[in-house]
Image (cartoon, rainbow, N blue to C red; front, side, top):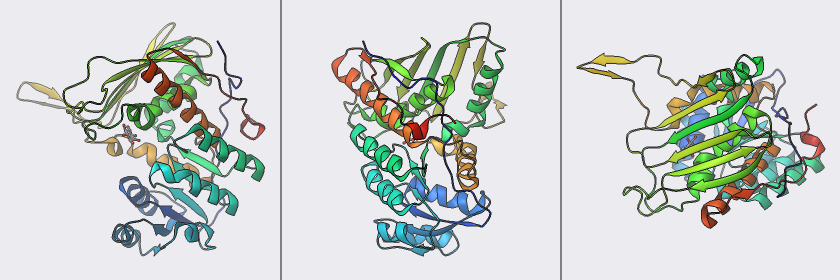
Length: 351
Ligand code: ISE
C-alpha cells in the first residue's frame, strides 16, 4: 500500500493578465474551440480571437469569420510562434495536446489546454518537466467545473465549517449518447475525469485509492461497459462515488451531493425555471455540457484572460490523468488500486 506525497496543495493556476486586449490563438475549432471563440468574442472582456487553426480549413474559416475576421493559420506551430498572438487556447484532439503545449512553453506563451493535458501519464510528465525548466507557470488546464457557481458555492460552504467535516460525495454524470462500441476506458478518461478533478479540488487533497464496478451494460452502448461506478478514497478517508453513464438517452445531467457531519449540500443546475403543465412538474435538460456549464466556461476564460489564477495547473492536469489511469487499471483488472503519485514539484506548491 502506497500513499500520495502531495496532499493539501491547491496551487493557484496561471493566466495572462495585463491591461491590453489579449489576442488569443485557437488551435482546433470543433465544438469546444468554436464555443471558446464565441465566448472570447462576445462574453469575455479584454480578449479577442487573433488567429485560428484547424485541420479542416472551412471550419477554421467559419470560426474566424464569426470571431470578427481573425487570421486563419495553415500551421499550428506558426500560430504559436506568431508575435501577434499573445496566448494560445488548445481545443484540438486529445492526442495533439502534448506537442502544442510543449511548443507554447518553448515560445514562453500562456496556454489554456482543454482536458486532458495529455492522454498519457508520461506525456503529462514531459509537460511538467518542460514547465518546471521554464521556471514559471504558463499552463492552465480546462477543468471548467472549478468555476461553476454551484461547485464554488459548495466548496465555500464546506470551508465555513457550517456542516462539519466532509464524509462522502455522491456524483452522477450522464450523457445522452456516445459512439457505439467506444473503448470502455473512455468513460473514465473523457467524462469521469471531471469528477476526479472536482474531488481533488473540493477536498484539497489527493485521491489515494480507486475501485471501479460495472453492472451489466446497457443494451444501447454497442458493447461498451456503460454505466460504471467509480469509488474514490481521498487521503483523509472521504469517499467519492461517481456514476458515469454516457448512453443515458434522456439528456445531459450532472448531479452531486456532499454529505458532511452535520448537513448535506446538493448541487443545483440551470435553468432557473421549471414548468408545471398537464399533470407534470418538469425542468428542461440540455443535450450536452455546453449549456449546463456555460457560466463556468465564461468565468474560466475571464479568469485566464485576467490572470487571476484560479484555474487548474499542469500539476492538476497530471494528477487527473494519473488517477484516471489508476481507474482504467481498476476497470480492466477488477482490483482496487492504490494511487502512488510522485511528489509535487516546487513550482506547483501553494504559495
Ligand atoms: C465531454 O468531453 C466533456 O468534457 C464534458 O464536460 C463531459 O461532461 C462529457 O461527459 C464529456 O464527454
